[in-house]
Length: 144
Image (cartoon, rainbow, N blue to C red):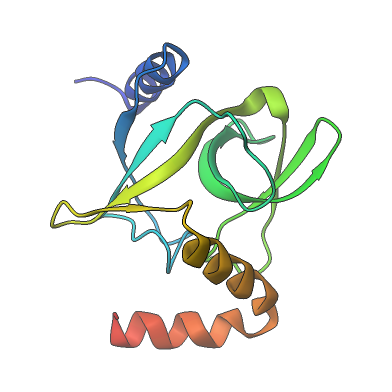
């Protein structure tokens, strides 16, 4: 059986070679923008990443995460999942391995994370951080 680490390293290698890679996601840390278990992301080279970009990065624990950049201080990058209430991860720029540019729904529909409206929604979601717990509770119950 092929290990997850091998698959991830191959995906990163392909991205480094300039190939866009479709990658499945798990978990709830990026709700409501990425639904783990049913959606996939398309990874590309991490060019033009800035605050608000969703990236694949190796964080200080040694794990890889797909989370949003919430702060940049020189070479230091702070990440946070949209579905997280307080947990933040940290890494260096060299550990940002790919940028998520599209999300592919379970039905195969591709949507960009780079549109004006998606960026506005992500900014609003971050501003609403103190109330995120209640929105996520409602979202998980209703499954919009």
